[in-house]
Length: 308
Image (spheres, helix red, strand yellow):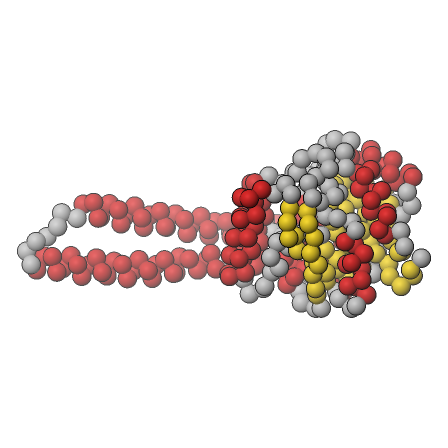
């Protein structure tokens, strides 16, 4: 056994009853030569996931289970696992085997070279579809344009962090608006990445719907950029200049005694301005909503029971 490194594996679980047995068998093949523990975080599953995890714990060493009181979301589950991890290095991945456990060896080798953060970049996905690929590419390009932090293209929630980073996340990054894969890329320190191919799910369906991805994208933008709040200023300047042009045009037409009716132009301009105004108010409302959530300081997650 390699005694030079201790690793804690964090696995978020939500309705993965058909994948858990295959997952733990494959995972153990790649981590058996290390000092390790595995923590499954049951994120309010309503299938048989928790009972299967208990059976796995009875037959496997170094298995911990954290069970939430309800579903708090994938990022809350990862954070709970990180908060309770004891290893020198922590690795987060999903139980659906789309994050290949065999890549853990490569991640550990990078950690041995002194990297505090090892992210993964998904270079292909068998079940993603063309539209998801395009949307993901657009999202990261847009986020990198508006954020001071440069994010890895197609980064995933499959990553390794050192205990140093764990303590920073545990003590400093406690926002209710979370983008965890972004947090670990924004803290600095020595980091690198590896690449992987995401295969199809072995069983079950992804709990990430299109609207869940949209919500995650909004969280990421709000967590790392204030640019949307400046849209009102930018659009105000643009339409201020536009109104000056309209005014000059109207004066010229008046002096040459050819005053246009202007009804259609007036209606279009007023409608457009009100649309922009409501759009900007909506953006401000979203930011105020997130500020309200932060101010309430409600728990990110609630643990019902530990199985250690």
